Amino acid sequence: MQKIPDIDQLPSGKSVAIYGYGGYGKTLEALLVTRRPDIRVSFIIDDQYSTLLEGAPSFCNLATFCHIYNDQSPQILLGVVDQTLVRKLSHNLTQVRLPFTIIEALQRYLPCEHTFDKAFRTAHRDKFQQTRALLFAEPDRQLFDTLVKYRSSDSPVYAQELAPEWVRPWPKQYTDYVNPYTITCAIDGGVFEGNTTNHMIEHLYQRSPLQALYGFEPLIEVYQTSRFRTVLEHMLPLTVCEKALWSSEEILHFKESGTSSRVVSSGITGNVREVSATSLDTYIVQQRIAKVDFLKLDIEGAELMALQGAANMIQQDRPQMAISIYHLKEHLFEIPLYLNSLCSDYIFRLGHYSKIFNETIFYAIPRELYRESYD
Image (cartoon, rainbow, N blue to C red; front, side, top):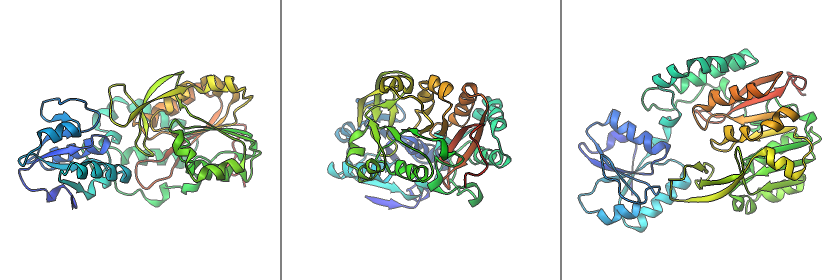
């Protein structure tokens, strides 16, 4: 293994293979095309490919690449930045004794899958404008403009840090603008190990009459072995359902990738398992939940499908909501516009809790519950 600061340090005229073809793998490919046209990407290596797909580049899994590897094979570049994945992919390559290179600056780039290129901005100009108009406060509209500008690029760019005035304190994520005094029953979509759930409940529990929390986590073993489980279950009655949230009851393909584990299409392989999914409308009836007061969703791109599966509850119960809208670039406008179509007389607010593109939360608060301050 070797580490280099950036792609500028790669030898001229090299042939390379990218191992890991998620968002950052595709970003690395785009960087090489735009900044290092002298370097040829000849292979994409990812476990989602079961056989060799020849082309320019060719696609295959690691086992296939090992069979065709020789001294003349391309230099392997790691296309991931999540440290859990870096360790895993590094271990895989070390086990088969293949040399590889880590590009240290890769994590500083804005992933291509999260940028708004000119064609995307043009195609969705009206939806951007409609979403901006929904926001209740001028600072939120300015934040929205800042995020759109920040993510607008036709090629990979460094993810510069946002100015401090746009970043709200992380402990308030999911509970900003939420009226805690009216919440007796809450739903947490995306429990994982329980860390963010713990912070959310600590904030709510100080002032709310919270009596029950229903969580959803298809990777239930992560939660069951977490140190946060005992803490949470001592705080209040907590039920964690071993299902993914979706628009209906069905079996989904779920790719395990740490905190970025998510639903994927059926053709994807490699660290993928089948999980059961349910809709909130179905679950609420099955559990005989009388009324939901608060809904939080942070489920790696499945938020819109989960909201579609909760339409009846949203219209009948009028819950306060905190929804992640950054996992898919279309969600910055699709989720606000969808909620607006369901929710009458709601206040919509926007919060951002990261120095880069992620952790953008859309809040929907019934007007009768909204206050400028809850102190």
